[in-house]
Image (tube, rainbow, N blue to C red; front, side, top):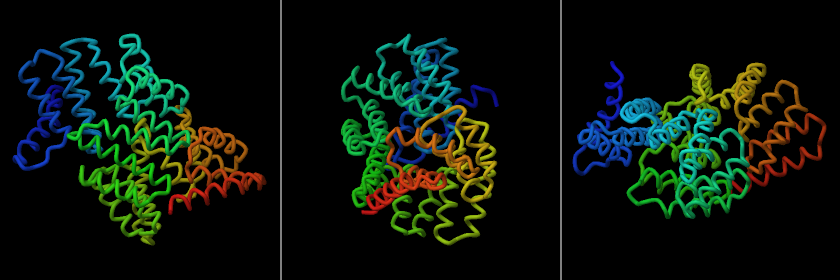
Length: 404
């Protein structure tokens, strides 16, 4: 199949699906955007604008469905845009967006920096800088970029969501929720997937704050808006596990994996099987997870952190855990990668190094039970009973808080 043919496979499939449903069926926002972009291309096939819109629509469809093949189709649309208008600014911005979608964070960061020369006052360009820096662990730079977004256009939606994410990372859960609630108010009613995403983030923050009834109500609202939404299913399963309702958690995670068959979702399902006492299914799921995770390890969009914990906590293969963690730590140093690397060092008996990495993670301010559990275990093995007790106290407080 040639490149132009590939370009239209996903987009025409979406058109056929959407048009075949009938007037009373629900068409997602991204599917509507695909339809509109294809109409634009049909009307003006020699202009890049329609192909840019198609690339955006397909990348939005990737988020709606968690299907990465839509990113490949979006890339093909973007290539056609550049053939028609080499180096067009909107195309350059979409290129960075696609890099972020594929987790190519170092390349996205460099491309976003270059874009500040072409568009020094573009809110979304600074959003790309915030995203890439946050994922790489450059939190000071991410915060500056998010603040620049809000300075350029106070109260803008992408600026609010990025600021909320950073507030959460820095431990300000209430501040993060307030910003996300503002983002929800700024999201158009017709953008059901965007609204479901924001509501799911609000639910996550309520969960962290220990307000389980509110979190659950928000998640149900999100599922009413966008049925079967993969982000929402994952968070609802987490609540069920906190409630020790493991059979329900398994059911939700099975649905999640059916919707989004990624290795990291299979890892969550395997752990849920284990907690539910379904050990043969857990063992089978872990084995399949390892196979899938190793296959994608060469890509930036991988499940390497889960693979570290699989080797460290389930497979009793500490050397392999460290090998994977070192590979990931070589190119990013966000909180969760530092935690995985620290744990891999710990299970290999390298606790002084492990403590250094975990202290870097904790210094950001993130309130995460797993980070404090790991910190307590590492401190105890080092004979630092005072700090181990302090970290254990934080774990108890967070657990009690989450289960209120």
